[in-house]
Image 1 (spheres, rainbow, N blue to C red):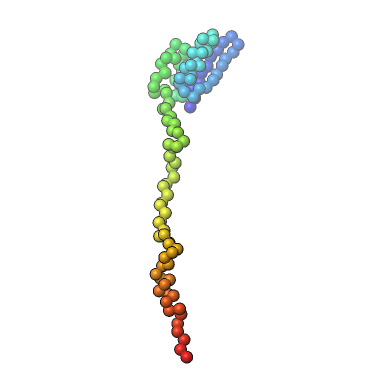
Image 2: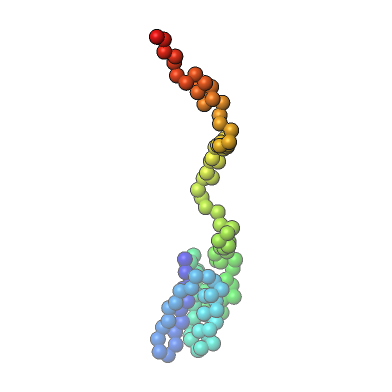
Length: 112
């Protein structure tokens, strides 16, 4: 939720929102330096701070810091894949014994 910063000068009123309390505080201080009157900051909780109360932005008004991770450190929320079954290696130079046993008869013998 944004922090709303308002200020008034001889030309009119300005309303701008900022995402963090430090950015809102910087903007409010800049408006005061530029000659704006009635500078206020409205917090996401609805607390309105006047120009003399700006230093009272307490830690409870500040949002939690978001942690950013490098792309390589990010973890997805998918389940881990199951490992594949290992296949027995087939060596072409040594035929399997099953084939040798079935070829020994070369089919049924015919009686005449």
